[in-house]
Image (tube, rainbow, N blue to C red; front, side, top):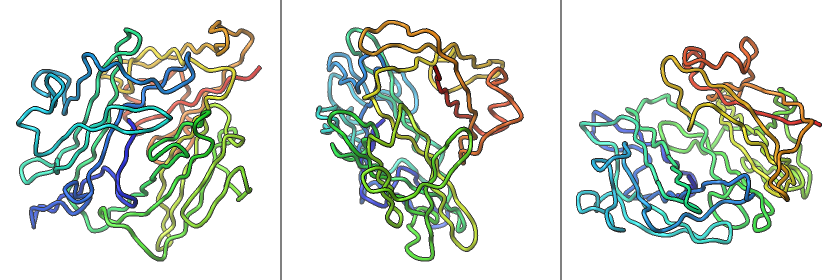
Length: 326
């Protein structure tokens, strides 16, 4: 999903069980806008969904969880959600504005928003997690806001988007820490996180902002920000994607989506395609890097053939990076 929200705020909601109020982010004061960003590797672009049959859901994809009906928000959800549109990547996307809080006195568990539609007759679903937890005085999180040349929330470099600017803000229980924080930006290179230097026109760094241009990104690059506060480091991982490249990788993952159930093992059978012809390109060697989802640290004690539910759960989530070399 693409996300638009006021600078300095994120989707994470903190609920204070004592005062029975949302500490941050209060969506009644800072509404969040979600819009589908389904990427077609074959077409090399973000696709615009077909309007017929599109649907938004809350927590489960069923009639019970449906937010919309016949192209409008159901009356039961009207105080929390409203339909809108977003301009991004040179196109207009359907969007859902969250204008009411999802955390409440009786329920402050994580929520999901789903969007389903079709493109060229093929069905797809986008999902977005809304983390919710009880407010804790020492809960720190690095929030990354994304802005592309073509609009807020755009992290895909394309003909319409030549740069992406990431702004990092350390939050304490949902409130920004405004002083005493230093920010370091890093790139994953051959399985090692390396500090990024300021290079005009390529990777520009100023305080808590990092701006990257298309010349500095090949395919999908992994970055992270380390915020240091009171001698402790807090980390958030993020990506930039360049779709100018003549080739793209189809990962061939055996699991649809990013959730692995008990007893399942995720396997990969990647292929490289020539974007101009759509044909499979041969002679490539694939290199896999496993990253701990929480902080981007490289996992070395298991390999890509051991992505069982147990191992993934042990690390609290694993990201798989696939590089093709010829």
